[in-house]
Image 1: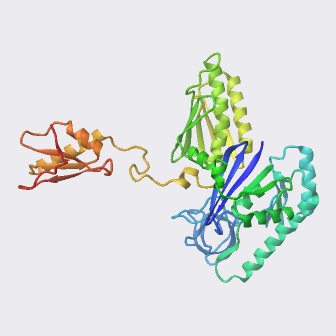
Image 2: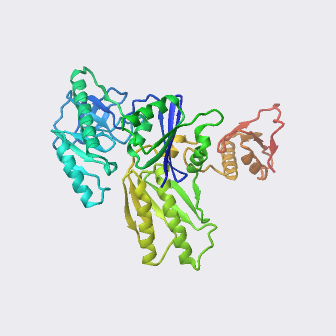
Image 3: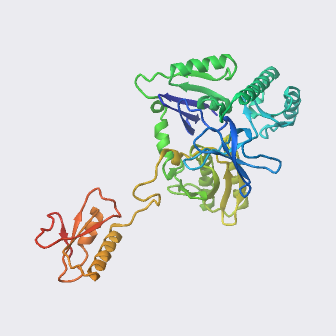
Length: 475
């Protein structure tokens, strides 16, 4: 696999796209100069303890107090000072940042866990001999009073580089403690790396990094010389003289496709994504796919292709939580196992924690994916002013019927018209084909372009006031 990182370092906002074999796999964005919250370390002061929630609310210098879950061995009181770190779940407009007292300082190859003990090797390192070798090295370099996690990227890294990174991470922790001891009020102790540097740190086998800023390009070259970036990774500067960097790599087009409900597969089948409050539901359809000797073979081919695309879309759309996939039904157990194997293989490149629970009796694949960031459609889209998130609006015929019912209420109250209904063009067209309520009652429909599809207003025209020229009478 050829993995590339394309960075649009525009003024005020940085975007980074992970491209694998020419296809967009991840898209990230961050305000330039933002200190960020996830991974950032804060000096906080406990403001309130809520036993019913098993949590404390901590002032960390932000607008909203942070939410700190409490464990049985934690003894905190109001006013206590505490060092906390932001977790993956970001703060919202109404909820403060979720924090933890278990600090993780991540490097490229190691993660330092102050206050813990022991050494752990990433589960993704499968070779027993390599795990044993890494364990020996990590136990020898683990700082006193700290735990150490050896990341998957440490495979093939020299012992000297691991020693230097462990020392650097420990020095960072010592500096955090010194700074916390001097702080008189809550605030930031240690900010996280910029977005593109975090991605470079976390992505494995990165073939190329392309960035649009000369200043950032120079910083990347320096970081590579200091062995913070693999020497095999090619770093290029993209000059936006005639074209924007994301346009040149067709990133914008792929982002727009990732916001669509329907995703087409090369075989002619397609996926339908529906985002519910409790889960994400994906429906697999055969569509235009007609190849295959029989229905079973056709179903298997579509499902296998769908599995690979679903794995990519989960990363690209940053889907988190429960995921339910309705694959095309297959009767054979062998075909089901082939589908499970393909899905597991396709998810190996996902940096978020995923777990496949299996295929239910109804043929639904249940899986979970750890929520890390805001889902793409929520990050780039706002609620619809028309449907308020329902995805549908009332038909013109239903709006027309509701308007007529309102006039009936007005007539029961003693009003006799003439009545003018101002509504959307579709509702006005439906009204014109409706019969009037009574021979002596005049009702007119006036189309108002631009009016909300579900909204209408009714006016009773007084004596001597002319009917609007654009209004059309009901039959």
